[in-house]
Image 1 (cartoon, rainbow, N blue to C red):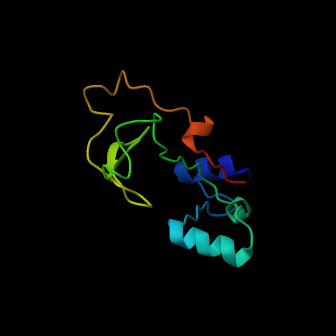
Image 2 (cartoon, rainbow, N blue to C red; image 1 turned 120 degrees about the vertical axis):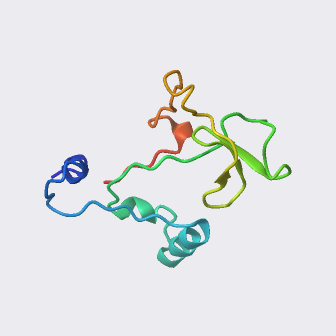
Length: 117
């Protein structure tokens, strides 16, 4: 099975050839693992099955950043700065604008996409 087939089978409650998984790291753990393996791209070899999208700021020069204690992302709106996940303090997507909301392109380099093997 391909990674895609494996994930879809699991979502459809069918038995895949093996359980799809995704191993992620906090920033300190990721840095420690990269150092341990001597390979900053070690995550590409994990065989993760899910797509992950980063939350890079949506616009350079936005009124957010370390000085304000807030960051802006394409997915979460404005969040308090947390090195790993952040805490959403407002939302770009609401029940009122969901039909009109244009979701970020997961294939865009700006989305920080990383695919499994």
